[in-house]
Structure formats: structure tokens, C-alpha cells
Image 1 (cartoon, helix red, strand yellow):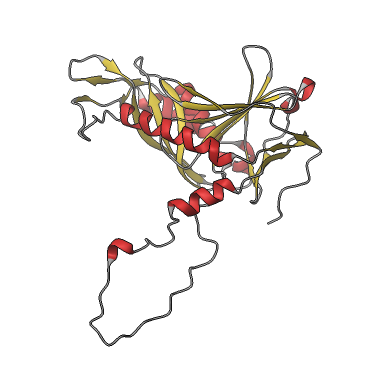
Image 2: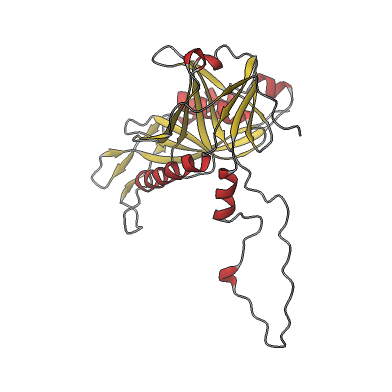
Length: 295
């Protein structure tokens, strides 16, 4: 697969990363460029995970057209995917994407086996030093984040854009710490590791909103015969509305991620979780959406 296209508009950072903590998400904010090219970037997580929701706000992302754009993190390959458009409260153009994974968690090449040592003694195995198959160490994951130098957007009628960044790991670290604390709180986990008593979030009128979601199969993916499943973790607020959607896994084109989250946020309804005293509280709800073409 080809690497990222050469960008025509290169935007350098115009601010440091800033962390904002909300009831349902953690957000890192940074501004790139200036004047008409000023672009604000939000990187959101609703809990621990390998994916991020990315929102870009500003004139450089105005008027995209067509169903897909290409996103690449350098070094890395382009991923073609859907996107969501809107306007901010200040009237600025918005382009958002759900379930972005900036790095690959697969090994590039297998580790070379170490040379065997036969000292004549009894052979033993210490599994505390073992590696799970195809699992990167935390040091390898950090190295991959640290290697990111830019995010590139192209296609969809947009002028190709490159956002220069040489401190992606510095952004990920505080975001992950915030997401860790958020995960503990929304999962109802106490400081000692036990879970608070109460009732979980439960779907309300699920058949109704499931039908609404199934009727919104992305046309271009249907035409291409594409199928897939998107696993998500929703944050359900005290009113029983999903307020945040984080992709935790997907099988199929990444283009399904955006439509799945968008439709769940729009249509899904729940009975909120409640604490031991019967008071509603925000919580997680895990679900999946399968897009399958009927014969």
C-alpha cells in the first residue's frame, strides 16, 4: 500500500497540548497554523483503549465531499475511511473521525530467537519473563508513538493537509492517565479494586433504535459489498443518553466506525445505571453493530 501523499498545506503547532477533563471523556487540545489556516485539533478518549476520536475545527477542513478521506500518521500507511462533518458553536467547520488508531500493535517482524545455551544442567522455563504472542511491550508501544512526526489528511475534495507533530507520545501519556481514572470511575471500581453495588445501564426500546441504525447502512459500502462489525464502549449519562462513543475493536473497513458511533449517539436510549442508593450515575455500556448484507 502506498504511503501518505505529499501535503500541499503544512501546519506547524501554534500552541502546546492542553488537557481538559470532562465527566464522560478526556481531551487533548492543540492549535496548528494561523490566520485563515488556523486549525484546532481535539484528541478524545472515553476510557482506556488503543483508539482515539479526532476532531478538526477550522477553515482547512471546510466543504469536504464524497464518502471517504485518507488519513495517515507518519511513519505509517494511509487508511481510507468515512468522516463526520458539522459546525462548531462559533460557526467553524468541523471534521470528526471515530476510532482512529495512530499506530499498529502488530509486530513488523518476529523477534530473532536467542542462541541456545546448553550447560549440561536441568532445563527450566521462567514464564514471568515470557512474551505473549504478537504482543508489543510497553516500551515498543511508546517508541511507536514517539516516532510519529505528522498526521496527513487527503481526499474528499480537501486540500491535502499535514499537521506537524514531534511529541505525540507527550500527548498520549497525560491522556492515558486521565482515561485510566475515568475508566475506574465509570466502571464503578473503588480504590481497593472492588466494584460498587448498584444496577448497570440497560437498553431501552432497543428494537426501535436498532432498526433505525440498521436502515443507515453506508451506501458506498453497500454498493461495494463491504461488511463489518464495530465493537464500541458507550458512556451513558445520568439521563440514559449515550454521550461518548469509543471504538474498542472493528472487523472490516474503518469506514464503518464513524457511522456506527454516530447512529448510536443519535438513536440509542438506556435506563441509566444506579448506585446502591438508587441514584442514577454515568457508566459504560459495551455493544457491537454488525453490518451484513442480506441475500
